[in-house]
Length: 354
Image: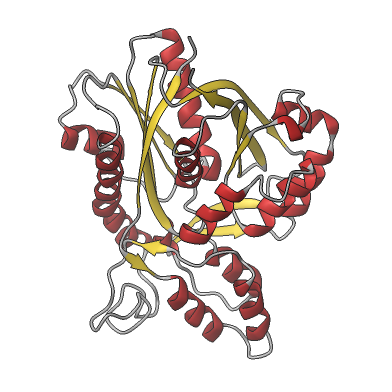
């Protein structure tokens, strides 16, 4: 029997910062460029993004007086990582609690954690294992700095573990605090990149028990000459995200290549795929996938709904999409697909349990 993704729990913080960010971004731009930013933000497909950053006194945003980003220069990387060390485990545990409400979490044998928005040692995996009271013998794997496709790597690793040990019960956690990395900018491209990102966490249980979604054939590939299109740079003032405007076009062109498309679909016509769990990296990226594979206009509805409600939560985003698919009716064949630094594309086939 194949490994199964039995259930997924998700969590986001309680502070919606999307509107406040847009006001801040408009103030950073020259007056001539602000209207263009406003138009592109309105077309982003994003209505909400959530942040672990507390509201400033009086209920303001993190850039208001008393907020985390109120003073110039903005907090250094050390202060941001101190906050990550406190907030990331808490948000991860909220997602695990949501998972526990759906599936029993006893006898966890392996813990796989993915995160690219912070570093702490002992790691998030050790902190979570201790807080959950997992046995000291639990086998841990921390997947760091892979970016938006790290959920694929985490679930693929869980699949390999269960295939080698059918009795394994693997807890997979993705947690990202992207809003810890706001940077001053007065150019359109970096502000539009920051517009995409929010905070979120997800937790999944992967076992050999036939419930949920069967995790099938994995795949991975890298687009040539694309290493600089998506990049995180570690600076003294947080992690600076670089997301080139060329990314959607390169994705669409890659998927238009028959060999690349066959790798993604397992040589099946895209129209025969019943469900698509595509990382909601942005409206233009989802449009590029739909265009490149000639998908039906509703094929990516689950991804677009996640983008609208949460924005791009890096590695956690795909898990939110899969959670929506799990909550829906049974399906035949599905494909999970995510993109990230490299420019890499990774994914796997899936189907409903019998």
